[in-house]
Amino acid sequence: MSNLVEKISLWQLYIIIICFQIGSAALVGIGNDAKQDAWIAVILATLIGIFIVLYYVFLLSRLPGKNIFEIYVFCFGKWIGKLITLLYVIYFFYLSARVLRDFCELLVSTIFEFTPIEVICITMMLVIIYMLQHGLEVLGRTSEVFFPYVVTFIVTTGLGIWFSGGLEFHHLLPVLSNGLGPIFKAIFPQLLTFPFGEAIAFTVIIVYVGKTKKVGRVSAAAVLTSGLLLTYGSLVQIATLGIDLKERANFPLLSASREISLLNFIERVDLIIVFFVMFGIIVKVSIFFYGGLKGLELITKRPYRTMTMPMGTIIGFLTVVISNNFVEHIEEGLKFVPLYMHIPFQFVFPAIVLPILLWKTKKKQEKESSL
Image (cartoon, rainbow, N blue to C red):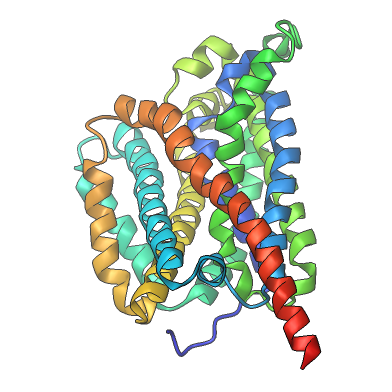
């Protein structure tokens, strides 16, 4: 195991969760099944997302100081626990590659049109490897520096479109024209699993937070904040593009931002969008990558820092070969990943482990009290 004790503050946890959940969700757009009511679906999914993250925090609270992998080993035994951990490692590394591919596709289709996707992928992965090589604290401190810019850019993008006359609020009407059916279709399983259920990765991170008693409230506040920002982004995208253009756009937030034209001077703010999305992507890939590395640390008994470069190389390769094109990449992310990957790892395994965890911890407490 790593000899260095890592710690992040509650404030850093709050920031990291927000950047993580905004990440690729702000980039590719969410809730399209709900049409013009996508913003309502995001609000409802946010409320469910708060309960999801509180459930994860509750699991960890039953064995203080232990991450989710150590809980699986405690509940299922050494061999089954490590097998489940290995599955999570594959899951986290796979998601790292998927999220990184999202950003690489954005860059090669908008700014670096003649740059091979491999170059962008390797560059981004080297930054992430360097950051994690220096520990989780570096990610926390970096997030503190860039977080104000991320929130400012998100808010000012919507205001810039409004002042440019690009917002047409009639695109949001009629509200609930098809009832609640499309909204629930958008929530289950897509919005529930992406981005809110992906907070399962924080079951590896939360144990490094100093003040554990306030982790639940801080995590819930972070999910609420990120949900409100995503709702705001969804409203801006629909009001600017209309539902048809939003569904057809590969990157709806970027398409919406192109409507900004102020004083015949402030135009083409693509770089601003790319900047705040880039930081969200770096945080998200880093958290998934770190989760996978900590799983390998448990299995191999070697410090995770010794594996950042070889595993980072594998993720970089997987990012490039994960799909042949962007359409295939998105199709796989919408149909295959939620049902066959997100639901088992985000909900099924944590639900199965709960009764066993409660029984074993109660038995442990009774044994300790009898001594």
